[in-house]
Image 1 (tube, rainbow, N blue to C red):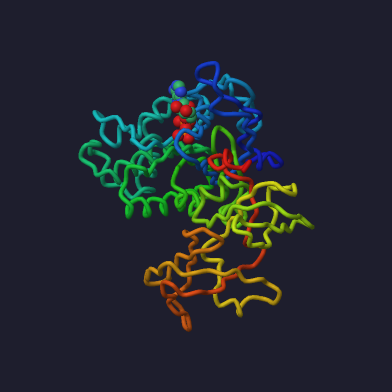
Image 2: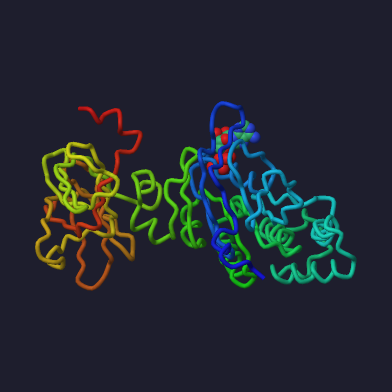
Length: 376
Ligand code: ADP
């Protein structure tokens, strides 16, 4: 029976830091609480510290500073096999000389579970991943997808409450990966387990997770459900990392009640929501999703100022038109329009006026790679 009140803090990282060489911190002051039954994904570019966090939680890497708790208990000093955590990795790590059945028996033997119970559990776990007929095969006799199913069964066979997965589908082709994403989600829902999942694939993170922690440079940049991450990125890193965004550089002229007036670099003035900018005169990057731009601006509410644009090209993509525009001195401003009734394809050279709702234009900090230019 779950201890109520602790359920939203089943896994806790408190001020956790990690250094491998005693100098550089690859995880910097991590604070994160994961709820019981939650599917939490750590998403970020390679080298951002995701795997290190998972390894510290699993007990394979020591914590340099801070505390990790599981079910309210500190586990910094607890050896990995006592933590009761199931794990799945990209490269399967099945024992090649053992059959599938023996691979699954291993974590049960380690835990001192008797033969009859072992067999029942192995059968149940194999059925769960639809591999019941494969108990006597060796890993080499299985396809990549089948091996990954077995790895999943082996992580679940001892019925852990917490399962860690590090790029578990990274080696699979797209179709199989999408199928396995679905299967993992189904297992998560039906077993009620807590999953901490690591990936650098944003599509995977957005479709599978209850919440996503976006990592960069050893820090969580934003922790939010997928829709919030996409609709309301908290800074320019997240805005650029998740999905596609148009980026218009400019200067803050005024901020009133969270609404910024931004002078873009060509002199155009636009309204935007001030996200993590606060000062007049501050350089900013306004980010706008391509699907939130409308050139039939008569469809938008009154009082929205359109912006002049010139069509560079339109690519027909079946369900959408993808139009590249010249806007405020930038040539790579993208607008996506649904190929729906009444929608027309814009031709190169056409002058249009585009508009968006002010809440869809977000004034953010300048990303690091643009900061050196920020003084001129
Ligand atoms: P991610 O999972 O986001 O790709 P990692 O946690 O693997 O990131 O790595 C974070 C940083 O720590 C990287 O700079 C990486 O080179 C370094 N690192 C990872 N593992 C080790 C290790 N065992 N020894 C030394 N440095 C490591």
